[in-house]
Image (cartoon, rainbow over all chains, first blue to last red; front, side):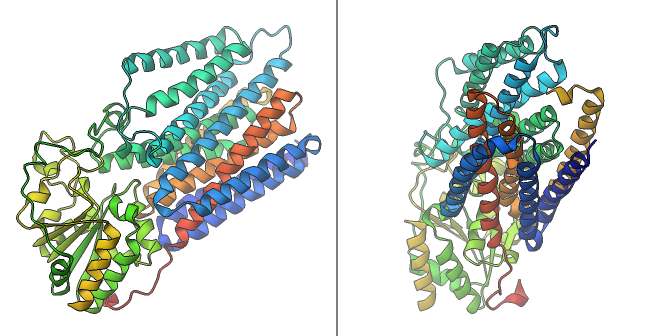
Length: 470
Length: 107
């Protein structure tokens, strides 16, 4: 080993440690940002080291400069311009880009290895070949899967589960073909044409797998695809003999897997159910029948404001509706006013409120709500009984009491916020349409519940004015 | 691919795979729900290290097709790594502790 090679391995080690610290420091909001900067520093180190020490880079530096320059501009612009509400889509895009890069690297390694294959050796070594195939198939699948997830969250593709006739048969055929081709490529022939077909099929598989999944489950899908990209990166890292890729890829593969598991547990569903359950066929359409027959009570903003201003404790339950209406600013204002009047205000955050776990925390933090006022479900669920008002802002399924009692409900068994235990429930909602999962919510016809229809931002602003006057 | 041929390299890779997997599992288990969105995006940025793989491909690109692949790989990898870290930083910046107007004692 030359000194340069030794130093290269040490650089990989240092960057690997910074990646672990980046994730570890996320265990507290106080250290999280430092950790992320540390990870970025380790990343910059390994990228710079590779640029300046790799043999052959001198002739091809323009590739890195051109593609890297364009990529950096796109990355920075995307990351800076995206509104906080669209964060899940943005992560999906970045993840898809990583998956695509992994697939391209695997393909290129395959092409160069086949070309260098000595004529007396019939096949590439099996184990590295399997890793190459895995990198290509998982990366390609992650690329198109993430694009579909982006399209669904952005509303470019219908967010309801899209099932084509014969879809399951088609998916089974494609997955079966992938396995057969993979085995052929590993042990029978190193045909370039076959490898290209293999990658193309993986691209199709990504679409087929994500298309039938409803928009409400996209966060889980993105987390899973994130884990997949990690695994693809680890596989290509092994092929390239590059420990930085191997460590980082495995780290993300494992962390994405556990995050996916945590999210599924929060919804009390298995990952199998998320992927193949075609959950939420209603998708935002008014669930007629049950919902239509509900008798509901409406309330004016002023009355709701008085209810809160003269209460002792108000629990705010934010949901995606708050994010869409960008109501987090006025919500903070409302909190400040109520606190000034001596009313205790806390926020109940359901693990899957919004479109991503922790989505509400990010939005409320953006609006300067101190994070110690944000309570997780288990922490606050018993406090609803002491709350004078539960103010539900654009949240629906996570407040549905049917999840506790109605065994026929599609979300039966999902842990929900005990909003219905509060003395008064004020629900801010755009209309009586069903939630993202398309399930009617009996909370709305409870006697203690009053509905306040309209755009969440305008309604909260009216509440702010009402509390000021009260 | 040739460097991965050595059985020793395979064993080394296996060790890293298993141990890094455990580290990832343990570290992420301790992240609170409220930081799960930045976690997803931060982990996403970490696998942007694939850009290093794409750079290695670029350095050894010896035919037009592999040059095109290297261009695509570096482009996508850079989007992943730069976008990932910047967007995570933007989110985490919002989690700074701020003074709680009134009622600090009652929270």
